[in-house]
Image (cartoon, rainbow over all chains, first blue to last red; front, side):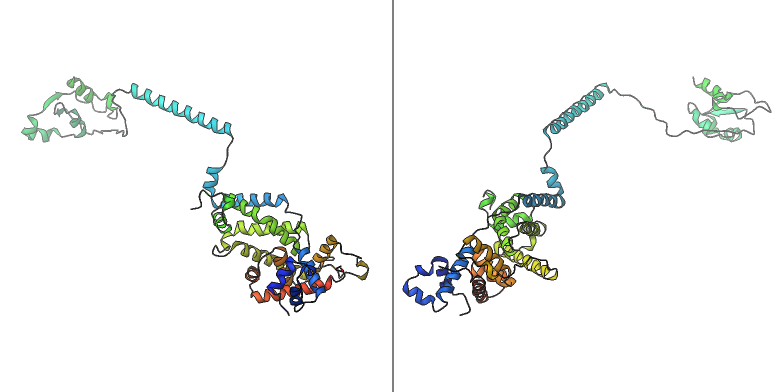
Length: 202
Length: 187
């Protein structure tokens, strides 16, 4: 026989040779000698004896650390949500949040109360007009009250005088003739023409 | 489905599925369930070296942490675990063959060590030493059957061989061990 018979194995695990019935002994001896049976039974009994020593607690600690590290890598958001923080830190964060919210709300209300309709002037373009005269204009026709038109468009008097439709809408302004050699590069504010025009409007 | 079932009532396979999704409690439960058994298995397979058994146990469960998807949930977990553990031991035997160290495989008992009567504790010590002298296949078969008390069917799955081969190996291992331990007279 070169294989372990299931029935022989059962007998080996349950009975010593002496506990076998005469029939069992006869059957057993067709597979092995009584001495072998005793040896086998002893071996099986000795083998099944539990090992006294268990694993070191350090093994579990190491494995739990590895498990946490893996969780951190695989589920960073879940880990962050599940991580514990100290109670006082949580309380401090809540207080700061409440205080900040309160301040923000208070300032917002104050702003709302003080707000009244106001015209806000905003300068985004500065234009500097520089007029270089090489001919002294003696008469300027201004279309009142659009003084700006005079400044923007310098229409020669000869053209105005030949156009009765425009001429009818204009009022001649008496101007001092500019002296030859007078500087013409003065600022608009000091311009005698403009000052006159301003006086006319008022 | 298993949401309200306590972890210790869950099957190994369900726990493994939870470990795959990063559940630490499932891992702790599985470790508690198998750590002692697997430590004893490694201890018996590796010459009762408890420190070595610790290292192997840690390595085994590290495999579960790092690659839980390696386990096919349609298989029985314990069978898979013993297969992995058995392969680790075989690798260790190969490593030991390549780099032999003194006193790793016990010498055959000498004539002067024959006791007058059976001392069971001594017999067990001698048995472990005799086991270490068996071939890896015979040793694994013997340990899984008589120490881990697995069925021959489970062993055949773990060792990937027919049940008949398992029974042959068991009988051979018993004969070989009995021959080596003949010094212990049975009265």
